[in-house]
Length: 342
Length: 245
Image (cartoon, rainbow over all chains, first blue to last red; front, side, top):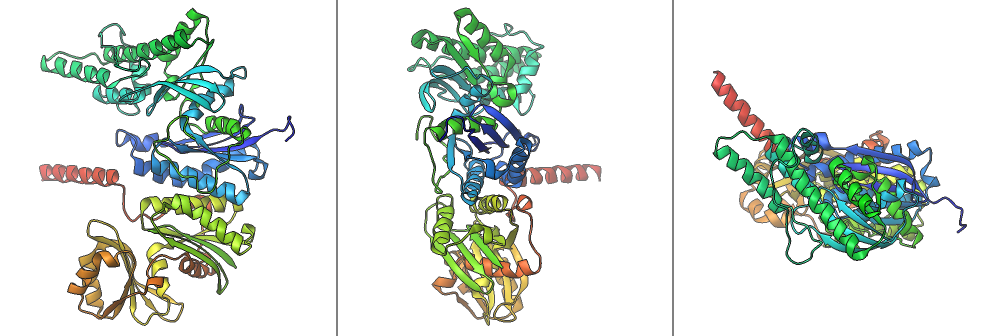
């Protein structure tokens, strides 16, 4: 392989409620990034319904893949490999992307690279930060995941901590429901919090015994629910904006604390965030400030690359591809795939 | 005309290639391995055995449902991916029709029964006018096994059953049928991509093909969440109606 050859990857992502495809060149140059979201459908149910998500993926996948190639001005023939998310995620949803990607790769005679969804989120940081290379620390925070990860090298990860119960984004969704904001909770709580006082209600910071880097958000969520019920029993009006702001602050504080503790212990001069919650303005600002104070360079993807997307899968697939990773036609969807498992 | 067919609607994973009136190859496995791990490797093996150049295929046929939701998705997504990459149209074959075609030429009525859980079956009733010409008497549907028996007793003709519902409903059929009946032999009793391809050849001649992008499976059932939402809405409407009157 010549060193200056462009490696073009068509990537497909369908692990939850976004059907997505992208064309990425050399892991960092995004030529197209198509996302077909199902949020309006799932809003009717107050959350993602796996069976509906899976059905929608089947309906949309070809159009999304075609648009990704068209937007990039390329054809399937131009691709060097097909990358696809094979876990973790909703099994029925994952299967659509995996089956489609395998069939496309097989029929077009292209190598297939299965990608870990969280590795994709982390790799989203490579796209807009050409200077970013491992090692660095990364906090992955989304509706399904909360991981504090040491990125040792491309494709090499060490998990320092993870949530022992709810993911941070899940807590956002539940609190949003409790104060009547609806689904999806993340952006709605964030918007409401702008009108509120983050110091108004001292929600407890979650403590986890055992691993100092693990997270717990279920206690915080319960504290919010108890606060609301308590106010109702006393006939007091609740201030949704203050609840949203105070809850958000408690989550952000826990996330930032853990990240800074990890910097203290492991050193390094680079800290990144990733995942859907990484698009939360309060979280971005708090991390940025904390990193600046320590003279640590802070990386975060644009919001469009924080949400589930295929460009990030293309970025991760590139480094796997260059490392020689190839998957065979029996690649299966693995809903509980662990980070670092290969 | 060359057709590649896939059927992963039930426990069987099956791939076949038919060229005009000839079945060139078929690979079927009725084993517990997941279709996501078997279907494409089976196609790969079959293609190698018959020196298949995928680009020479005219259409890709797939058992469109009903069946296992997961199985339908694997089959559909695979067919759609192949259709996209090869730029070939898809032919959706109703799963129950494909099953019935296993018994092409039967003198009896043919009644596939698939276990649809909750005492229901995905079924249909078919008659063969000739060795290859199939007439649909009852279109594929999801109904109670008791309802099916009533229909068959009403039609009043000898019938042959096949499908994975046979072991599940056999004793109920034996106790309640008033017509002559029997059961298909082992090699004809489950889904087969050969039958799907063979039936698809007729669809292709009739121009019944769709763009791969537009193809979607036929589940015959809503998701549980949708069912519950619609039921709740109906209850609400009924309550509102009662209040108004």
